[in-house]
Length: 456
Image (cartoon, rainbow, N blue to C red; front, top):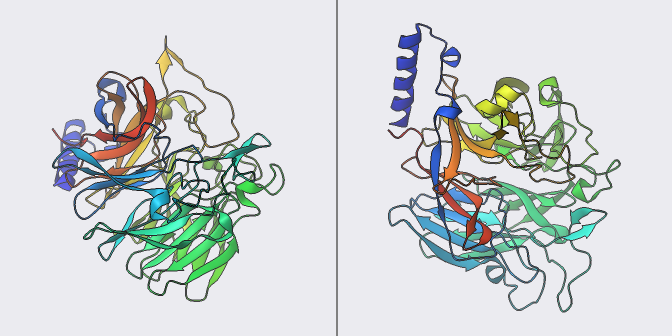
């Protein structure tokens, strides 16, 4: 149905303008429209910034993780039922990892989406409590009084039928799980750990865990200017052959072959494109030449990704081994300003919609006061907002190339959702994310619902 609405909109625009190029048509500008979001307080007043950890399941419900910063408080898993319009607490991360009575640094968050296979949701955990070392957030090396150090992230499964959780295993080297994807057909999980960046392969069928070593120098545990490398936040699987792909700060595209157990750098193709900008791979405060987020597009049998800092959409063909720039899918105000947005790493709220043809992207947009763009910090040495910005919902219909900025998103009281780096859609086309808002005088990051942008 959504595909029909999109195609109808294209036909109307084309008829009025008398031109077949839909990208050249006059669109409603973001100043003429806005979306009103609804915030949900799930009951966790320590809820902090969450990345990726929200997904829609086949039961029609939205599953999400609320993160926690204290060393002794775990992140929480909740579920939202769109039909009943209610949220429900499911579990404490530390408890389902079997560490509730061990008095170790808590499983503070999840940094990955939920992947459904065989009636179960698969995901993993990450550390939420950091130690500031050399001015950067690092994996703690000094345990708080009375507590042990972080044990490492866990791979977990949740049975949609029984409601039971299962601890599948522990990531190696005491590191958290930063990035994860799953071959849901072959039941294989692939991950990159934090902070050093080990590539992990977990076979759900056999329970075997493989450590393939470091993916990029010493990862985010390295020394800036030397062996520091920002780590890839998005991995994808080519469903045709099961090969796994990720990027590096240098712009290399790496391929893991599960059958042979080997990782190779692809030759004659990379992400070092002029349009993406110029980066020092040993520096902090950006994703470098890494793609920020990437998804498989079955219709063309290619992957579509977004480069975080520049906001350029591109497609990568694993068979032909080439990368092609498609469009800059930042917000309309950002495109006009020509400036990078405020989140230093770019945005993770990027996915295919229900029609499997339209990309949905939650991104930033500059704020203007007295006609001047509100400027943030020039640079920060971590993944965070350099300044205040608006949240925009962008859609891009791949077959026709139609880009739409649906406008800035505000809460009913006029305030802005901030720190948005996740996305999910329900069966009716409503968009969900996790964002900051004020609840009873306290800032929390919790569930936010944005109405279907195509609904009349």
